[in-house]
Image (cartoon, rainbow, N blue to C red; front, side, top):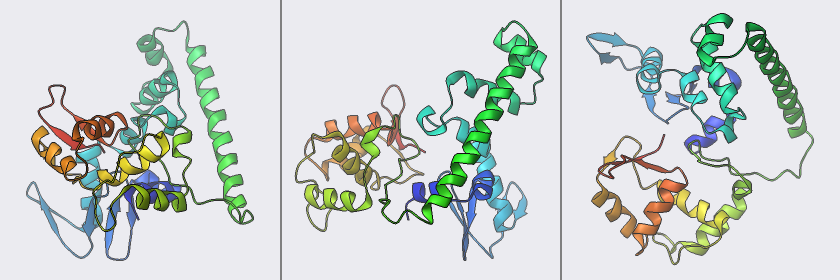
Length: 250
């Protein structure tokens, strides 16, 4: 199961914690980092058991689960930029008067109205979540769709791909038994599936020089420049402005 599958399928309580407990380990839902049970982990002259060490990992690497989630693409959160900013200020513990000053709005009643709208959005989300859970028990014909990757720069109908369709696309474009492309697809949906597969060649904890990225991509396809551009455009890779360092986007 890929990291994004764990993320999207995790129960709400696990999402709030930011990690999932499995039989032998704890798995970070935000980046896939794994902490084995039964081991004591040293950090800054302190010893941590596995679950506490996972909490420390989330704090050090992601700030908090809230920080990570609020930073996701608006297509994933469903929040406007204005709502995103408000939630950040609420989370910081600011009162309505302080928020009014920060956002330079007319009165605190405006902030209260925003709180009401967000609460209404929460109620609607709970209703939809319940309906969708009930639907799973009855809808035998619902296709198994591939969830969007967490760092997607845009989410639209390109992500409307079933697992069966994905397998067919991978067989069509990759040489059997390898990660080398026969050709690079022109259609956006197929392009997305191919790029997602290529992203598995990069380690989430590594930082790469441009020449190293090029070497990885050359092993996939001769036009590595095009691959590199699309890997960034689709949110699989990120880089420094001067192109001196690349990494798998988390």
